[in-house]
Image (cartoon, rainbow, N blue to C red; front, side, top):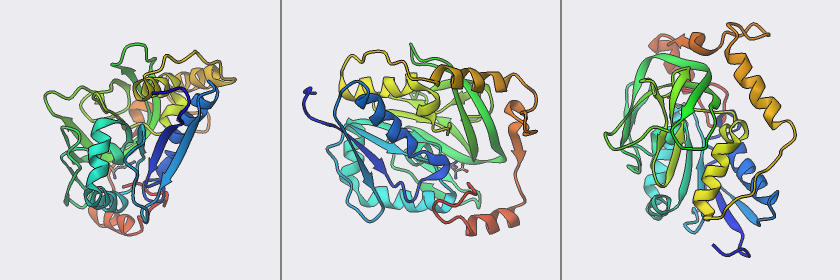
Length: 273
Ligand code: GLN
């Protein structure tokens, strides 16, 4: 890309898939470019707008099952966006990751068709995975990934789809791996926002999207925050009494209460199914 034109980042459906401030991923991408003197523009693509197809990056966050079903239908309605996503760089978190696959199963047992951009499927697990995650990244040059997960879905990757990481603490896809890594998509179960907690991953995405060699950044507090997140993992209990890590697999509530909660699951509400 030319040094003059602004890098365009589309934040897709922040009003629908907004769980855990995943929108912060777009902020991190933009800020890391600005710090390097590279012009950038973030486009917030809400449900009522026609998505642009000429962006270098697309960012999708997580959400509850009801929000996810809406987003699947929205993506299906905007076919040119799907084509653009295949050709550009995409970050997809949790529900966003599941949405890009072949299909996903909700907590209520319904199967929703995905965008088919990734060869993966997601079934509802028996237990909700809630807690801190640490994963070894499969991409070279990316340090240990840390983040927070809250999902019921277990994801199975197709034979030719590589994971983004190997889980050290937590659940991720549910089989010892986390997320997916293809030429155009970085997908993960990690919230945080994941790019704020894992700047190497943000820079990997930026390098892939811009083709630029990016100068290293020294961001005040970044190393300290990473040390803290990794240190917390080694403690059986959080200082505030929250159980963490391997212990963070919460039993699924009974179907009746799950349905009640799913019924309340308006986009942006704190419950996450
Ligand atoms: N609804 C999905 C699940 O529970 C995704 C949740 C999320 O995005 N945090 O698996």
